[in-house]
Image 1 (cartoon, rainbow, N blue to C red):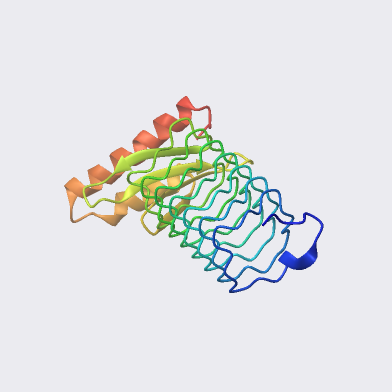
Image 2 (image 1 turned 45 degrees about the vertical axis):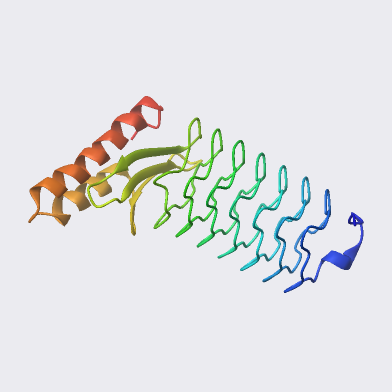
Length: 222
C-alpha cells in the first residue's frame, strides 16, 4: 500500500498498527502517531515535520531523507532505524532508543536528545550543532566527521564528556546529568566537585581541557 501524498487519512493514527507499510513520500506533516507501530515501515522522503510520534515503535523502519523537523519523538523505539540524510532539526527525541541507528549525514541542529540511547549509533557527518545530550548514552556512538560536536572521552566512572556549539557560537559542555554553558563554567564546576578525590578531579578536568583544545582547533573560540 502506498500513501496518497495529498490525502488526510494519515493525520490521526494514534495507536495504529502500520507494520511494514509503504509510506514513501507520504505527507504526514503534524500527524498524530502517538504510540503507533511503525516498525519496518518504509517512510523514505516522507514529511513528518511537527508530527506526534511519542512512544511509537519505529524499530527497523526506513526514514532515509525523511523530514522530522520539529517532530515529537519522545521515548520512541528507533533501534536500527535508517535515518540517513533525514532532517531532525529541532526534534524532541528525549529518551529515544536510537541504538544501532544510522543517522549519517542527517540534520540534527537543536535536537533534544536528553537521555537518549545512542549505543553504537552512526552519526558520521551529521550536523549536530546545538544538540542537547544531557544524560544521553554515547559511549560507543560513531560521530566521525560530525559538525558541531566534540566527544572528549569518558572518565573513570564511565561518564562521557561532550561539547556542542550552537549556531550563535555558544559552547555547551556536558557529562552525565551536568550541562554547562561555556567551558569556564564547566571547569569551575569540576574544580570544586571532587575536592575529596584528587584523581577523579584531575580526570574530569583533563577531559574539559581536551574539549577546550579541540574547540580551539575547530575554530569555536572558547
